[in-house]
Amino acid sequence: MANDEFLASEILGHGAYLCLGAAEGGALRRAGAGITGLAEQLELLNEFAAAAPATRESYAFIRRRSATAADIADDDVLEARGLIHVCSKRPEAVTRFCDEVGRLLAPTARVKVLRGVIRPRNYTGAAMNNWAYGRQVVQQPGAAMPNAFFVPLSKTADWWRKDWMERHTYFLPRYDDAGKMLNEGHALATEAGIACLLRRTYKSLDQPAPPGQYDFLTYFECADDAIPTFHQVCAALRDVARNPEWRFVREGPTWQGRRVATWGEFAA
Image 1: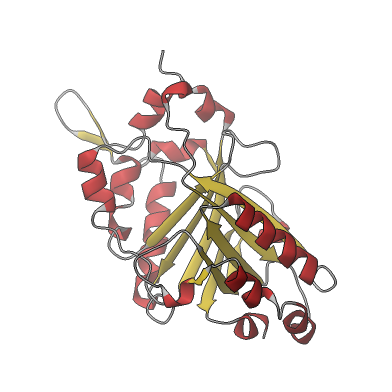
Image 2: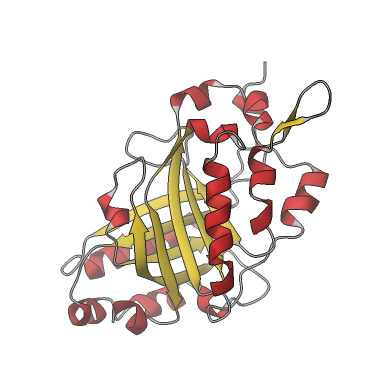
């Protein structure tokens, strides 16, 4: 049997997005004045600088530009005035950061924390790794790739009832007996974004996630001229004739923001 016990379970990193609700700018700026110092104390790097090599010890400030509702109603994401991202190999660092930021901002803004983990890729062999990840863009400084998109989502119960071998087939093209491609699958549907969209995915600690939580927290960064490509890739994924996997997907809001370097810019 192709049970999930054969899937990699190691945790490589921990991450969270803190969704900040409405708040008056001056009060928010004062309340969160210690957040950068907290990040430095935890030895987290500011992602705006995109220090190389890439690490899993970082934080970021992202200001709201727009948001669009989808299948899963979530006003905390839809109406968020900004997102704060934190990532670390140390779960205690992420927990402390989230707890302290929540405490600092509690008098001025509601903070919803969405948290997940990084696990090894389960469906990626050598060829797929070279094709999809060997060519992917890495994180660039905020001035070069200032746009950010956050799209939390979950899979349906029907998806999780499938064994992992069947789930795997949805990521690849499907062909008939004559060799004609019937649909592209997830990988080919997203090919246009490999070279220009930074992508990052956190998974829920347990999958499927408990009620009220997301299975996946997906995030993208890109340059201004790649924004149309982001929307092109999303449209391709959502086209179930091209990508049947999306019949089993329920999306939260698509939230768009702009990366900023400092807390002062974020809270302005």
